[in-house]
Amino acid sequence: MCGEEVFHKHQLSASHFLHEVIDFFYHFESKVLKTIKLNFLKPGFITKENLRGVRIPYARPVQLYLVVAVLFYISMGYFNRKDYVPAVGDHQYFGLSSYTIFKWAEPLDNYIQASIDSSWVKKGKEIEKQLAEEYTANGSKDSSVKIYSRLKKDSLIVPYSKVNTLAFHDMLILRGDGFYSKIASYSKAFVFLLIPFFALFFLLFFYKKLATYGAALIFSTHFFVYNLSIYMLYTAVNVLPAQWLHNKNLIFWMRWPFDAIFYNSYTEGITTFIFGEAFEFTHFIFWMPWLFIAFKRLFATTWWKNILISYLCCRIFYYLIFGMFKKALIAFTIWSIHA
Image 1 (tube, rainbow, N blue to C red):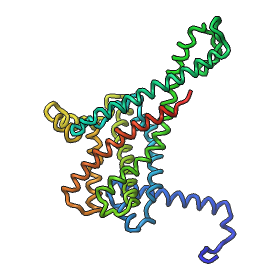
Image 2 (image 1 turned 90 degrees about the horizontal axis):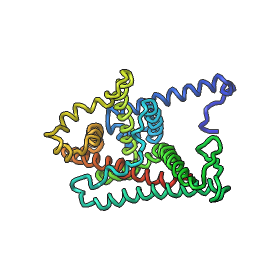
Image 3 (image 1 turned 180 degrees about the vertical axis):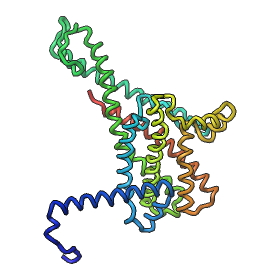
């Protein structure tokens, strides 16, 4: 066919096949690493290249995200960190009303927290009832019951009156195990859904210059790749000394100077008002410079607009991740638990 390269029989050999595999991974690896490096060191550059049609030398946005996400979860497993996995009770933090200007939203925050708490209790009662019915299926109130519990290797004989106590005990284990096994998987799968939300805000702030939602999605993906990359690096620098020296007190030692300067008894009130709690301030340190430089490179806006929009994006994105995404993830996980 026209356009096809000339075929040679040696292309069917095992050695040629192996050569193509090696060549693919070599160029794939070099392209991805090059893109990660440029995205990290030159904020906005890869996005600008993509938007002006220069894409062949770089990894595609979705391809880049998938590679970095895999590296992120592998590294988090190695460092034994599960910061990205919400825990039971995390929905009680990072409410909208925790911000001074949104104190009026406290009833809404309380309603959301109470609804998730109610779902947690309701799910427990459903599992407990199901277990009790299974355990008493072959017994009567006047006798002991032989139970083949899923949490016991062998059968167990208990008085009928103690079945509900056993069902409650087993429910606590099943509900907890079910929650943490599911939310670990969901947090990896659904975090990708944050990218479209980030893109909406980029488009809102720069709708005249981004022009299309697709362009905003590319920029949002590159920002998210940077976010995963910087967190991997930050975790490595903080956790490895603690692992090597077998001293848990060294974990996140990089925050000590910032806490001493910005969260002492004199500065804490002002810092908290402007940047939030220490955990949120850490995100400002990493996000705001990257966004500021990227906005300048992409949109050539004035410095004060860059600072203002970078600041707003940091606060909005932080709340999207910890205030909304985590709560939605917890609620969905509770709903999906089954005995």
